[in-house]
Image 1: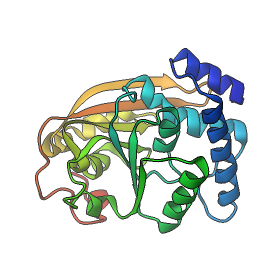
Image 2: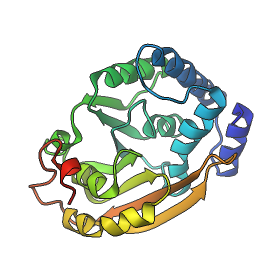
Image 3: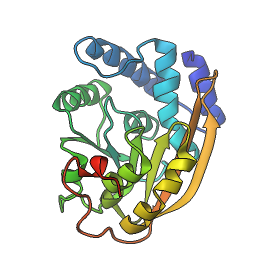
Length: 237
């Protein structure tokens, strides 16, 4: 995807980028490629692909949820900053907290935030299971997000404990989400979540099917969840 196409498609969705925001995306791309030579951040490094499969794909969440509000977003397992950093560039008003289990990715994100001159961003090196038990963060976020991290039954246990009551959990996935949601119904219910909407669409230029699940946090999550690090993945609810 060319940069001009990227901007035009976002404009069609009501997201008009300023010159500063366009240059921030360019710097994001340059920094990602530069650091990717030293550490494995992404297998996608060709500019057109980064713009469609990372930047545009991350921003699609804003087609179905209002990011113009002043909300605090927690991005679980963001890796190189997807989806929350592209969303932060588009919506500077949001506060972003990223938790990731690899210190080297946190180091990259801190450098990236300085390069892009982002404020209202925090990065934590931690397992999502431990982070969700921390009373400073548990059930404090308006919105919790994860992009292609794990199956829904696992993801729900990592994300819903961080989401405040009446908040929202957004899972950004590839194909087969309906099947995953069926399998995770009991987990969602147990953790206090309720599936609200699923949006299915294709990325531009035949870049594959995407699904976005929007989950409402209806009730407090029982204190025993999330379980110890590694357990949700080994023994899904």
